[in-house]
Image (cartoon, rainbow, N blue to C red; front, top):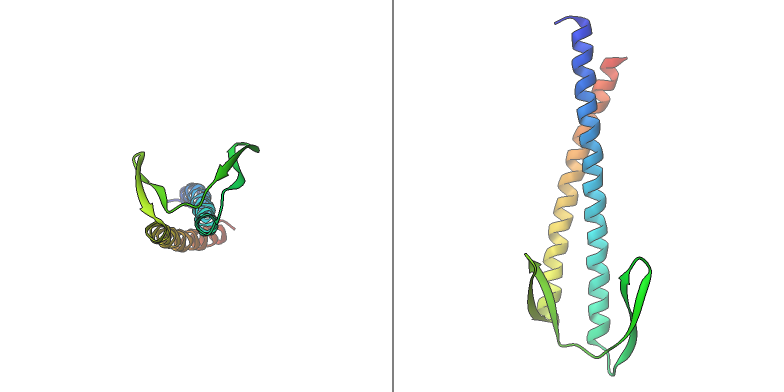
Amino acid sequence: MSSQQSRERIAQEYTVLSQLAEELQKEITLAQNLLQEVDATVITLKNISSLGESKEILIPISSGVYAKALINRQEKFLVAIGSNILVEKDLNETLQFLEQRRGELQKIIERRVDELNNVLGRLQQLQASLR
């Protein structure tokens, strides 16, 4: 393989790995956002379950649009378990479900960060080769 061919192969690998690094970063960001959403949901559930009387709340509709609603203390919650299937769970079951989801998201983040670090390490090696 000539020097020119070798540089072209390295440049192609660099391009592919750069795109992979971007995708991994997007996945990490998405998982981190979902993790924050799970944490916020846990706090909200605990607040709702401790209500003594009905309270007026704002329900997000979309893009900064809210509707006012009254909410009473809740004993049961509808939990999406996939494929548009909702299951009724009590507070403890719902919190356990969310804790499990949180653990799954943390594992995804850890794996993607490891993968990203490996890709970034290889990109540095390729960059050094191209100089």
